[in-house]
Length: 573
Image (cartoon, rainbow, N blue to C red; front, side):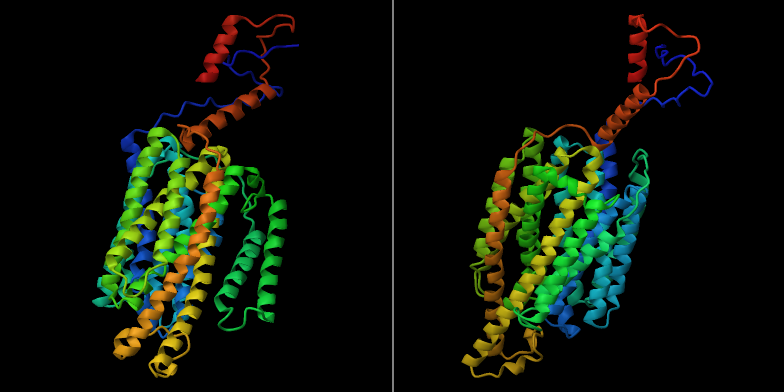
């Protein structure tokens, strides 16, 4: 029997010789400057995506009114984006295994911005909804890839230090977007909001090309789970259609409800069966064995409902309940974003300094519940100072929770599952948001309609004066008494949405309390993949040792110290 020859010997030629594995060089840590350079392109891509959405948030009531849309149309302009974003997020995550991630981010940017430009040419709400649906596909790519790329270059322990930059991007886009959108809407017109992100996208693509430099990722053959994607999208779409139209187009207890809910459950059940047998499932079911991931999925879904499902309707509160212009509406949302930015920045530094995140998340979940409860007390004539205070509290709670759910999952997963786990969190958070927007939009439509009808009856005005059923009113065209009725109705109806969100926020708090905290490690995704690759090569070498032609010894001969030292030195190199 022969012993393996030292790896420094020339590899002999012959059929019995296993292919030599290339030595794995240690991966040098990135300097702060290199991290910031790479991060600049990623954050700029996130900024463009968020700006494309926030630019129209303050002008959406005006857009729907000009296009003759209804409350359902308003809801679906938002829901269509969230729906396609939800379905496409895991697909983008899987594509990251097939192609260059930087190229994929740029493709997502192009899709997002071109579809935004197409929305600017929309002549009716159907065209607008279709364009926004395509825009959600690009947003799904930016959502999935940006978080994965950040995990590649920044370790969980150090990531908190950079959360301030992420929060700054969110703050500038969420504050600047509605403000600029309002100014543009009051000036040249709302269509220019959709064109405004084009120059930013060009800059983002150039910056990504120049600054985002990652080591090549080993590629493997991946087959996209097309049946699973179709079944998931079908099930989710049926559920969203049901919650949007039930109680308006048809009754909750009707054959349409039975058909939609039954079809959705059938499609989603079939999707689970397909995912359990797919070679490369979009949502790997084995990851649900991870307790932290399961809790994070539940918490992120609840966060999506309370975050998307309530903040989306703030613009309507400002414009339809308080009679503000789109510009004023954008300015009046600043307190919530300010609370989010400050809380995420401070929480991020605390997480990096202590390596702990659970206590901060408990505080955030508690603040979110308090903020939702306080927002549930507002009316059309509530002092804006109070409303602003409530928004700061709510924003602070969201800022402490949003990134830390992802951080907790990424910290505990195997490096090869980071992309799938991250995409899964984003998937369920966006799904919760889409469901929340649809359900709460239906509640708002029904509640506001009832309150308006009752208010008009009290002042002796026919309800038909407001136009078609479900149409959003234009306050500027209404007589003063009718305008007061509409403002009060929307103020009370939107407050109801926040009250509905409060118990959902309690679910998030219970989830955070149940989390088992794991101290944050200090290795980036790149370093973890390098170590995993080195371990795989070492295991392969042990399983298939090289056969030397001259260096052969008997099995009874112990290995010399020199040969072991030489082998160790070579392995470490």
